[in-house]
Image 1 (cartoon, rainbow over the protein chains, first blue to last red):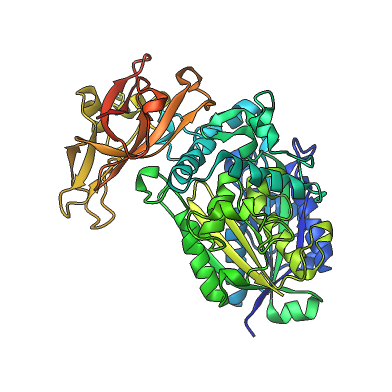
Image 2 (image 1 turned 30 degrees about the horizontal axis):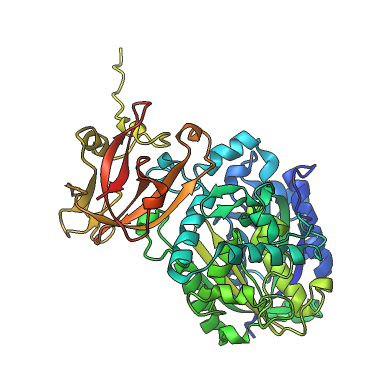
Amino acid sequence: MGKIAIIGVGQSAFVRGYPGSIRELAFEGFKEAMQDAQLSVQDIDASIICSAPEYDKQRSPSGVFAEYLGLTPQPTFYLESLCSSTSMGLRMAYSLVKSGLHEVVAVLGFQKMSEISSAESQERMGRGADIQWESPFGTMMPAYYAMFAKAHMEKYGTTLDDLALVRVKSATYSQLNEKALFRKPVALEMFSDPEHFMSGPVASPLRVGDCCANADGSSCLIVASEEKAKALSKKPVWILGLGAASASVNMSGRDLFTGLAVARQAADQAYKMAGVSPKDVDVAEVHDCFTVSEILAYEDLGFAKTGEGKDLITGKETYKEGSIPVNMDGGLLSKGHPIGATGGSQIRTIVLELRGEAGEMQVKDPEIGLVHNIGGVGLYGAVTILGR
Amino acid sequence: MSKKKEIDDRFKKFGTVSYTSLTKVNDFIDHLEEGKVMGTRCVDCGTVFFPPRADCFKCFSSSIEWFEVSGKGKLEAYSKLTYAPVGFEDDLPYCIAVLEYGDFKVFGRIASNVPDEEIKLGMDMKTVVNKLPSGQLNYVFEKA
């Protein structure tokens, strides 16, 4: 005894401008996970609500959701670690169940980025980092990741085309994902066509096509003890390994600009706990908030040697037929990135893959899956390893 | 009746848009006014900090002294922005960057008079005080 499983997964479609309230958005992901697990609300012992609060008008969404989802009077609370919130929520659910305090816990991630106006959103973007010492210089998320892209390109010879190929792959698979925001093909030529919006400069060397898009969405994971999972679920997916780390928010505290230290640390922990190595991973979801982020992830997770991440994309090794398929759901780049819902969506995809229920996105007979979920500019990192 | 309490909000003068006004290291602004970019050093254990801080997490001391960021640093990372957050549009385009000094690093901007083609990772640069057209203060990196 003592294993912990995911017995239900769900997510809303990821969209621009969700035409409803945050509680209604949350209901979509929750309903799908509950129907997937074939549970009723009385079966849920506690709920963990995950998001980045700066996009919400509603204070303390946990209570509002618990009421709307029928999860009162069970305990509910809120967890935030930017874009990695749901992965950290899963870590929290694991420990609540492992401790014996609860047997079945719902982890619900959401973000309605369109809740605030575009101008408000632009203003928040400037406060996405260290507001005392960095934001007064005029910083933005793409510019931070662009510093990493520049450093990786200069040190290892990664090219702009290598980056663009990540977006091409992403668009290839988002066309197969009915929940994805962007479902149109992307060609490498768009990046070299000055007339095409994909080639527009954002922060050198990153272009519009290198960046993921804001979206509205929700996701939900139902986590259960081994005993409950065996009693309630025909296809439990087991949590084999969990890793998590943090780093200096200010870039002046970083030693590495050609990778993310938090990802390396979280991956080491997760591989050790699961007793597996990178070559054992059959399918992965990585945090491709920018094209360069996916190449860094290949290296930080040990799928490629340091500096050789580009070879995986140019050699199509991370395509469905390759040695390590990555982001079969289109990733953040094409699926959309509703901050607090992203980790849960990544985990949902891997759970479906391991169950053999991923439809057109299905890779051949995977046994071990991995999820890499990053918050901020490598500020928080979570790596989760799942198995059948 | 009651006398209005003096608020030390010097830090609102830092950068194009400052999001912070109250901090225990407000003297940083006075040093900028004097033309000096300064970090802090823990008096008890000697650890140096940039950006400056009022408290040492290593020995829990809050006894600090100021030191000047001087000499050359090496350019470790940079990016040129074509889009900016609200409030920074008039500054475009500009480069954010990190300079490596050995014991500490400095995050800031590259001076606008350094031509793009001369910016290379690993190059020597120095940190200097910069007065913005609005009268706000920051610091920038120039070729050393």
